[in-house]
Amino acid sequence: MSQTNLYSVLRTGFSYDLSRVALETPQRSYSFQDLEAGSARVANYLTSLQLPPGARVAVQVEKSPEALMLYLGTLRAGLVYLPLNTAYRETEVAYFLGDAEPAVVVCSGKNYSWVAQLAQKQHGCRVLTLEEDGSGSLTDAIAGLSSEFETVQCSPDTLAVILYTSGTTGRSKGAMLSHKNMIANAQVLNTYWGWQSDDVLLHMLPIFHVHGLFVAAHGALLAGARTIWLPKFDLEQALHYLPRSTVMMGVPTFYVRLLADARFSRDICRSMRLFISGSAPLLTDTFESFQTRTGHTILERYGMSETVMLTSNPYLAAEGPRLGGTVGKPLPGVSVRVVDDQLLPVAQGDISHIQVRGDNVFSGYWRMPEKTKEEFTPDGWFRTGDMGRWDEHGYLVIVGRSKDLIISGGFNIYPKEIESIIDDMPGVAESAVVGVPHADFGEAVVAVVVPREGATLDAGQIQAALKAGIANFKVPKKVHVVTELPRNTMGKVQKNVLREQFKAL
Image (cartoon, rainbow, N blue to C red; front, side, top):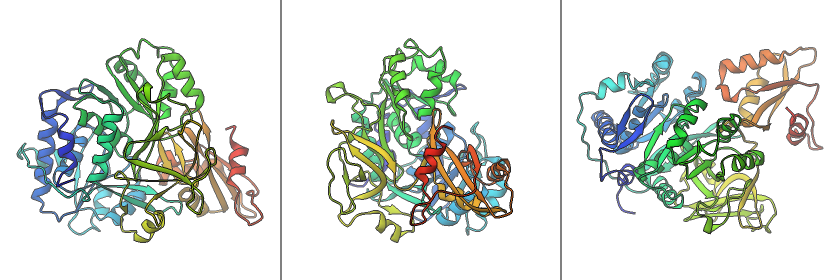
């Protein structure tokens, strides 16, 4: 791969007619020319700051067409995009800004005061605002700038994005994704899932993680397809726009909520060609109910922040059936193996460690060379931390996560982070956080807390304290106060016992 830029590759999909609609919102439509011009103004502004190569642009804003232009403009300027979950609170954002040391931070106006205070610790860091309606100081700053910009070409291994993904120790890790990583995955998915320029993508996902920004948005842009761009999942809007859509990507929660409404029918789905589910396990009941109600079989796939997409159930019937409970076969150009602790392949059906390699796999963690070395095998495979098995069809089945990761509503939650906060609360001796099955969210967070001798704990107060300090999706749905935690002979807490004990919740 010669000098290139992810934006240049995406633009090949819509360059033949820039006047076509690229994004449609309930308020207005944006053409591919609008995306080209808006991203050019952003790139011109960032270039005017004379930032060094590899400078980071941290973004924590609500979803909007202008937010997508900010992402594309950052790519075009040859800088590094750093998306942050909009649910993150001040203490969480403080860590990300301190670790990544961005040169520019773009945030919502309501958070400007505390973000600006945090940014003062980064020498020369600029803070701008961008609102959901497209207004803000960033919009003002770029308003008079040229709508033309020659996209910066860079080497394939040039860093394009940093995605923070927590570890079991509670310290977040910045996965470094290059232009090559992103281009490889976008091009493979474009072919494998049959993207066409006449597709219409129903986009209701957030754009601060892989699923919404890279898999969904990249897919539509590279195909030159129209995207119905909604701020979030809304049942009424979903039912309104589905008859005009051909592709929908969602987390299992979206499909559960659609099925719960009697108006959701085969007729509503009459123009659809593909429903894709990811970011969390899809329950078999949801998979089968959806098939019965709509006649469509949801396509499940498997990916990570560090790799974007790895495997997929088939799109074409000729390549095999889509099987519920599986994530399909490795995508073209991706290698997947299931091996034991000695890195030896296990027999079909045996559960062990999932490891991967390919052009889509990241180069390592930001400023964590030792962690990077630890996560790759001596022969160059990335240790996903997931446990799985191959079924009789050669499809991959994910059976668990060796790192205790909880995925609730499509968001990754690491128990250790929550446990550390609870353990520091007055009167708490220790705690354990687990995920239990939940029909709507896939998994729900449950905290089991042991009080210190003589102390009395209130579950509601623990929840309230957590809500004040961490993102809402991490807050346990239930807090249980118990006298002791189950342990094995080595003294390790048996979380499998806790999951079993509280699974009926």
